[in-house]
Amino acid sequence: MFKHAVALGNGRPTKRRLAALGTALAATLGAVVIAGSPAQASGQNCDNNGNANLCINVNGFSNVIHQIVGSATTDSAYVGYGGVVSVGHVQVTDPNGKTLCNSGAKALTGAGVTMSCLWHGYGEKYPTGNYCVTLWSYDYEGPLWGSVYRQYGTECLNVFIS
Image (tube, rainbow, N blue to C red; front, side, top):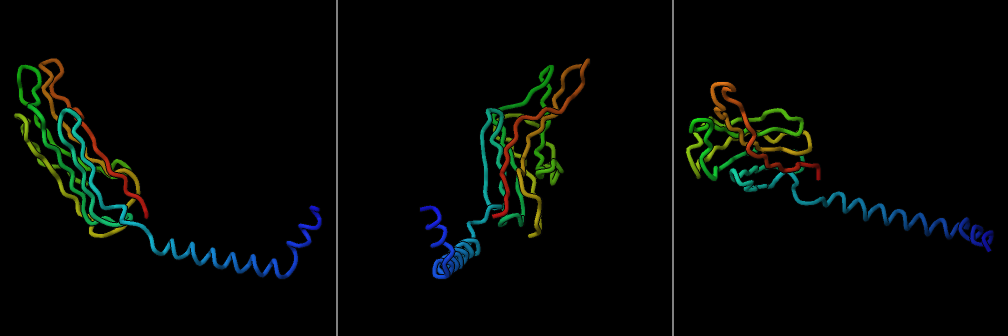
């Protein structure tokens, strides 16, 4: 029985049918690839981590990026040693950890302090992976330790080729 099945598979009519089926399948898959999917570089991720509401917004398509906006809005005051109010800023980084932009520094005096930075990609192709916004705070730790930078949250958006 096995030899008989192999013999039928090697006949010319079978080869023609398989070739026609392969051609039709290739054409169908080609159409699916050409049609594509929605832009993968456009999107927004926001999350409130208990310290602040962090958002990253990427405008583009596939791995072509027009601009990225990173922002944070505080939930409460950030106070260091002795009641000294902390100063904070947001930073946007690419998948390799390279800084794309930093906001200006602001005193984190209470809820509702908003910081943001804008980076222009000018419609060029960039690395795929996580683009992130991070909220940093410069906190006074007292006379023995001085001031230190602390990370108060990060939010990312994955950019990939569609």
